[in-house]
Amino acid sequence: MRTRNIIFGSLVTLAIPFGLTAAHAAASLDDLLQQTRAAREESDRLATQNAEKYNSASPADQERMLREVTAERDARAASAKTLSDQYSNNEVRINNLNTELRQKENALNKIGELFGVARQTSSDIAGILQQSIINAQLGTAAGGDNRIDFLHRFAESKRVPSVAELERVWIEIQREMTESGKVVHFEAGIVQPNGERVVTRVTRIGPFTAVADGKFLGYMSSLSTLNVLTRQLPDRFMEMATNLQNATSGYVQATVDPARGVLLGMYIERPTFEERIELGEEIGYVIIVVGIAGALAFVFQLIYLLYARIGVTMQLRNLDHPGKGNPLGRVLLAFKSDPKHIEEDADVAELRISEAVLHEVPRLERFQALLRLAVAAGPLLGLIGTVWGMILTFQSITESGSSDPKMMATGIGQAMIATVLGLGIAVPLLFANALLSTLSRSMVQILDEQSAGLLAESLEKRRRA
Image (cartoon, rainbow, N blue to C red; front, side, top):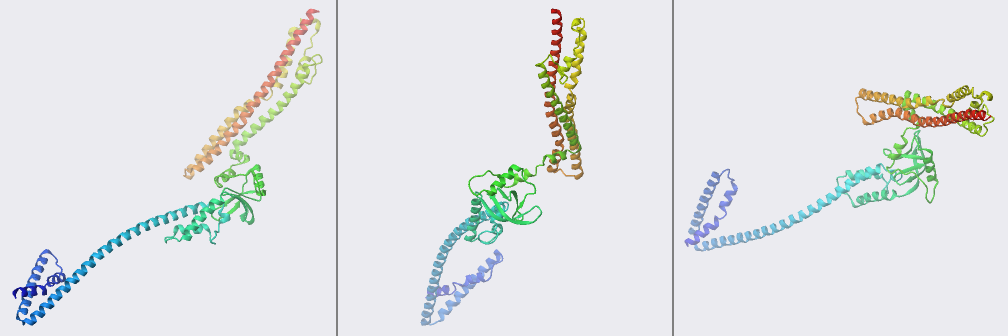
């Protein structure tokens, strides 16, 4: 009986301490110790109270109370087992869900990386297509809106792209690649140099070159349109442009800019010969005047020497009949000594011949001193122009306070024009002077030989007589 009382009191008060400790959270270890002691005392009190209640009851009530407590214990044990099993199942399910979550996170990260690459590719290709001549023809894609705008929207979008959008990015890249290998004709609006927009037939070589009406076109990426270049290439290139535009099949010679218009723009910006001369300014004009003067003197003297050379050659074939139309004939006519007194007058005859030869030498060596002066003065004048141009360049840099390499390159290039002009006149005039000097020396040598031979022949004939 006593054993039953203890068991009954323990079953009834089994849940009491946990309820107390759960209801009042301990603020410190001392509070926890006090709450534990209080819970134990309360448990003992309830156990004693239940035992007394059980002992004071009749046997039938005791049996009933014992059955109720036992049933409650069994029910709580079953509930505890159910909760334990449920807890275990929940642990397994949580582990499975965590595994599945990690797998999905990894897959989503890979998809996110894929979308990031797609957006970056879209941004890069949009920049390339924006500068492409093909965009003037295919600016409006199959979807109806501008392909550049679509690629920018796709690159800046934060949502997950659709399959159709991903396919369109690939299609735009493929279209650009395909059109890059074609030579096509199409109608497009062209901006003229006066600003007027005219619809005309355009011939395009991939993304490299475009021509219309026999003129080369440039591409304005900001407006996605073509424009006629204000300055065109030389005539030989313009003829190629016309032949390309008129061709319908086969092969034709054409101009292709592999830099997609950059080299073409640089080429047409090159200054012409007249513009380069203007860059030389006053010093350049002085050098040109010196060069022209030297060239005119060379041409005049060259014609005279050639004419005199022809006359001397003809005179050599007929020495017995000298004429006044050539230097050798005039020298021969100067020999007028009496044959009977040739030996006595030999010295006088030699002096007359020398006088005649010396009289012809200035004509034969005319303008050579001027050419030598021009050859020497050309580089010096060019050096003066270069130094003066450098002074102006550094002065402009000092005044603007900017060390822009482009401005410095322009100024230095302008200063070098004078040097180029000086060397440009000095080198040709140097060869011209050498040619005139050679021709004049050869003719003077002929005059000396023929005059000396004539005097010797006259003396020899006199002695034989």
